[in-house]
Length: 406
Picture 1 (spheres, rainbow, N blue to C red):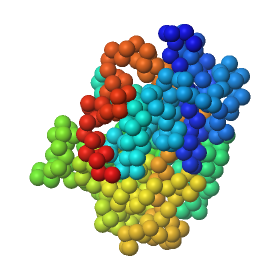
Picture 2 (tube, one colour; picture 1 turned 180 degrees about the vertical axis):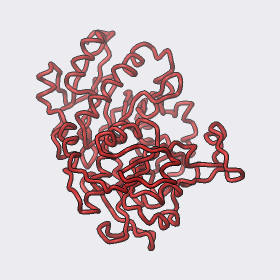
Picture 3 (spheres, one colour; picture 1 turned 180 degrees about the horizontal axis):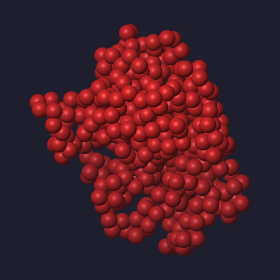
């Protein structure tokens, strides 16, 4: 390898259950080598990827078990501590920046091994907007799964699971089976990538969009949904007003009014970003009063805080559980009166090929150049939780207290 080459190693995913996604598809690996003459790239063999090893070798990519001669190592989900290689730059979703206790040991190991952790979740442009992520596919799959849950609950139609479909085309074909009652009503929250992903499914269904006001005050003889923004379901407790800047800086004086919409709904689909300083969205009492509600698809999946019925994450293997309104606890989702909750927390894994393709495009366009050009915008610096010196990077010094706790 010549002196000025930078070697990228693509790590095999080690989480259980296995994650089939990749940072780069075989074709994108070939594109990286073609577009960036100073990059060398190898791929660690894997039995679980959506793209088999031979697709990489067919694209002219070298398979290599030992990545210790790579400068930059890229995965997708949290890397097993045993797979960390000291003194390297790693890119993956670490789920540590919000002080997630279950990954405290991972962050400690990263510091001990003097690894520079560049977290995909923290990569933003100059305007502070995220430039990588799987949010759109969380929305697409989560929205589909919501109707899978409805069909099961009502025993009215039976959709194939997304991960058993060959691709998105087959998944969309399944939606032709969806039957909605003429008075069916759905509430959707969130206008980010996740919310727009969810709408991609709604656009393929016989369901009409109505305004928040119409949703509450009018009856319809066709299935309808309303798409709510933050100002629709939060208000200042003192006077009912909503001031965007004030809410995002200090939401303490605000309360949620989401229940006034959801009590008219058969289904609630949550795709919003939620900050743990913000008021809870739906309490146990709110949900108890939502008599028509049958399905909550918590695509954002914030456990047991904003939406009281999200008691735990569900899994791709077992995506649904029940919520007993009276007991305020888990119960059989098939039982009359119980809600069915869909709260899968790794939804994009159900469409691994399409999700990987889009993610790889984001990396090639928004990240690789910044890894090579000296990071003139500070994009890599601002997403690096740790340094090669085994220290927390300055913007993440707040994590020291978290690390000291355990």
